[in-house]
Image (cartoon, rainbow, N blue to C red; front, side, top):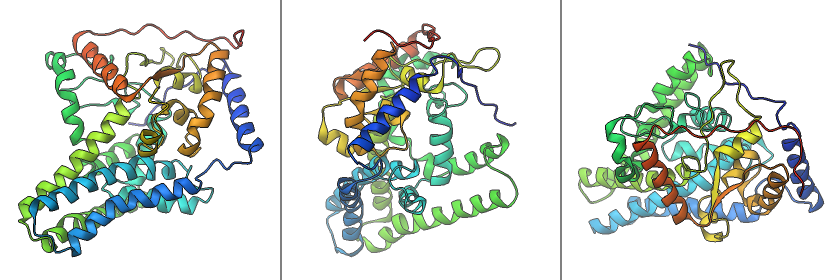
Length: 378
């Protein structure tokens, strides 16, 4: 079945995004700054790659005999894996790392190196999540297994009453489908929805997916089993622990940006049209957190500035802090929300409260106002 996307109301507050975009563009031109990666971003890329690859090198060639040291190296790789996902490949696959598409593609394939697939990620994340944020049936990021409920449009079951107690534990398993069956499922689903063509392009995607997965398991599971002086079962345990650490971090960062009490879950009307335009929709469905923490922002790739990221995904995250004041001021001038939590712990607490609400109530969020095209008095 072909995917029929919701339409946005382009007449509602039509001047907001052009005004905001013009102001952000002025910031870069007036300060003679590139929108892409700078030297600090390149340094971060090298550091995070080393956090992932140096422990792997010790596993290959270090002759380590202590199984607990082996376990520790795998744990460090988990933090490196998450860092690469959040702070390196994410920008590249949005086309924000470099003005050169070849550089973006090359760095974007670091996702394949850590077990994902850049081709399918771009559809799930760039096309679906960023375009239809928090829209049930379109945004796959709020599609959950039956024991979790992230959207008020999903039928509430008895087990959801307790999801705020167990959900965070299961965030540690989010990457397991990526290294097993998810790509084949997405390949077929996206073909049916018309998001990828059939025929030769479909076969090429399938072949590339299989080849990448063979290479992934070869270098990260088979070789460590052969080169590390611990049992294959212990290596498998370490491999899964690495994934658990990375997955838990990724889940915590991404879910606290959208499954929050402040965030809306808009639905299209009977004509398939959303209440507002795309940019206004992003402000209602997204929240920031820990905007003053430089170290946190460094590691999570600026994803604590989710509002800025959703409005300007083609700008490298090293600039989000600076443009956040422009976004906040412009949103306030137009009478629009700008959601932000003081720190990450506050964001986690609010996320858990939202999970509790979704688990115990059918939760019918208040309608989002349809904004007229006028600016509020400053």
